[in-house]
Length: 522
Ligand code: HEM
Image (spheres, rainbow, N blue to C red):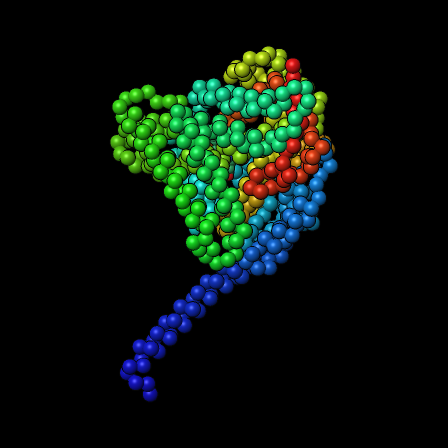
């Protein structure tokens, strides 16, 4: 018989044992039973794909295929980028069919490529699909990107953020032109004389779009804005490095040099932004005119919204404003810079289209600075940009998750399945775009987006439905301005040092840079 004193200890053992058993059951459910259940539910309906092996999902396979793909570059002029840019999905779709299963950790992920189904998922009329929520770890890594997610927030963003309305965009055009002028002046300096000069246009495009978004976002506080974006760039680089080490438990919490720097950067960004916002809010309260930048418009409409709603909850907090400003860096800068970079590379590969686009720019503007009306009349340049967005889609894929049992295209999906929408594969699908799907043929857009594909509409570089890119017109206007000003002044071809190696690191990037030879036009 146990002594009375040993009784609590036994109880402790029982409680501890039960807790361990409970945790073990939860872990098994998460890592094994649930994935198996979801797998059976999908396979019983005829779907096929990679087998579920471990909680790492297909990450090791993806890593191996990525490495293989990266070891080979592509022939110049070839636009069949899917095998190199999305090797895992390319291989599984080839082996198991377009609608195939891969594993995103312990969650099954089904690729959806039929345009009608892509539209259905992104339209989310039934309210059955949600954007993937960021985990705690990812949220930390996304600290520099802004992590406002969720349908409610997206709706709010569209109500409170009128900065993307056309009238406002028109007023931002001089700022766009000023940034492009800086770029072409720099290149004119490099390409002085008759000789062509070699430039890696990608960092220059990043610089350009960084300038544009800083000016558009912060107006007169432009330089402080630029500093923020520089800091964010550094932060994202550190975050990507940290990503490679996240298999070390708790890595992000170690006081390593990189982690300390990330925290320092976050604090500095916050300090600068709070300063800019306070200055602007004071000016607004004093009744001074606001500037036409994103921050001014955001604060102004937020104040109006708050007044109309009669309570501060209707508006957004300073933290939200900070989150929005952070989001624009990633959402607005990198995407547009890769678009402009691929456009220059593709126009080097297709000089006949470079000439046609230049003829149009010179015909519409002569040597004047492009204006809004002229930019909206540019048909050839628009078709070229669309065709580049199709072949070199900056965001190669979008993902959604079913959060309740849902039917889609004749398949019943249980809750917890990731729907993978590989935009790049959709844009290269011969059944959708015809036998010439991998060819650069801007004229397919000559009668607009709806007539460009067989199974239409199938052009999704900016997404679709309620979460479609808010910066779509902004990006196109910026890209047209940049391209028109470059075409007015330079002719360009590929440098012998360029290797064609499109690869996805977040966005579709030129893996070894975008070395182009520029020649000044006289
Ligand atoms: C070529 C340039 C661009 C491309 C290809 C692009 C692409 C996209 C796509 C595909 C989405 C939808 C994401 C999803 O549904 O999960 C998106 C959302 C978004 N984009 Fe863009 N984008 C570009 C430029 C811009 C610019 C210039 C800005 C801002 C100045 C911007 C701001 C945003 C924001 C704020 C969202 C989130 C909208 C929401 O929460 O509902 N984008 N973008």
